[in-house]
Amino acid sequence: MRRTLPAVAAALCLLAAPALPAVLPAAPAAADAPPAVPSDLTATEVSFRGGGGLVMHGTVLTATSASAPARPPRPGVVLVHGSGAGVPRTKLMGEAVGFAREGLSVLVYDKRSEGYSLFRRSFSQLADDALGAVAALRSQPGVDPAKVGVWGFSEGGWVAPIAASRSEDIAFVVLVGANGLPPLRQQTWAVAAGLRKAGVAGSVVERAEPNLYRTIADGGMFPEPYYDPEPTLAAVRQPVLAIWGTHDLLTPPQESPPVVARALEKGGNRHYTFRFFPGADHAAHQSPDGGVTRLPELAPGYTDLVGSWAGDVTAGRAPTARTSGPAPTQASPTVPVDPPAWWESAPMQLAALVLLVVAFAAYPVVALVRRLRRRPPVPVTRAARLLSAGGLAAVLGSFSYLFYLVMTGGKLAAPGPVMAGRPLVWLALQALAVASVAATVLTALAWRRSRGTAPRGERVRLGLLLAGGVVFLPWALYWGLLLP
Image (cartoon, rainbow, N blue to C red):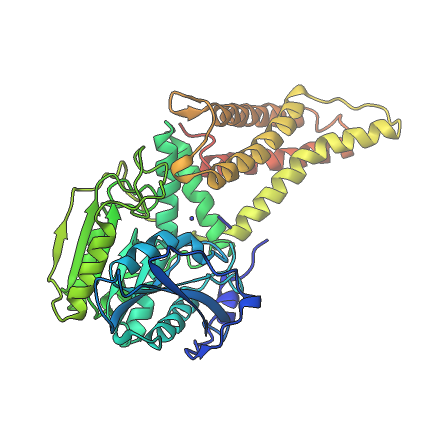
């Protein structure tokens, strides 16, 4: 849950190769060291082919016969990671151990880094990885191949339904912290919610932050921004268990469940169970501070629910449209994030940025060159100097600050000191923007008065500076620098 202007479509085409589900001999030299597991579990290292034929590595955890609540053949579940490139299997070892102790054989694998980065991602290819893992688990001794499901966390909540919609080999689906909304809408909400929680209001969260994400996505730096999960969920025929923590700060926990339910119902699937865990965060881990801090401990009853529910549905006792648990908290609603119009697209924003920097920076650069060449000084208005310095600082400073907010956003937003709902840094940038607009008017008046007396070079320099000032006005309005 962060992203130059590469084309997203070209990247996704490279990621479209299908999975080859055959289980391969384990290759320890290419994989991470096998994880340590508790003594009451056995671990089996496996390798399999994911999307595009990539060899992937994982561990199958199974309870020993003395501690297992169920005898073979056992149900099984494949764990699908959340976002991030190359996430190691150890990241989900707490869930894997807990589910194995409930009688499931659990395959957890290292997430791919090849073909996955901040700028490149394919949910389709990640689903092929999951299908390869399902095939590997179904072939394990003691696992009932007709009772293997998938578990998807966060980003995996988009991936697991794709895999399930493609294969009847998947017996059930478990979703944790899943999002029924497009990724870009979820991400802008998470960062804006984090800023609001830090006391920020006004144009920063209402205009600047969503506009920056739209520009990032339009520039190809946020992969799969407008993916719609509803059609895929409507194609899922397997029983679904969806789990949310009541203090989820990364996925809108009030808005997502109804979307997921509506999509399943639209496809005729009423075999779903929704459960909300009190005091739990995005990953259904315990949190002592409303979802900000994630403890290693899972929410009480979480693993019991997954084990018993999987046992019931694989025995043909799938529940119908059941919801339980306390209502989650969501401080603010999400807002639709539409693709930008042509005039606000990434290329246009880049062109405006270049024009503004050149126009504002050229004024002092020309003055410096004249000084170095010992040319006689020419009349310069203070307003022009203010426009050059203030405009340049407002443009570069606002982008730097907005990118900082994006990179540190979400539940741990750190906007700096806030006064009257506005970060002091943003208030300073807004003051510079207002001063730059006023300086544009004064410079235009001075330029008009001096057209007949000022040297031609000075008139050109002032004209370029004024062009920057004229472009700056709508630019600053678009980014919220001139709005409350």
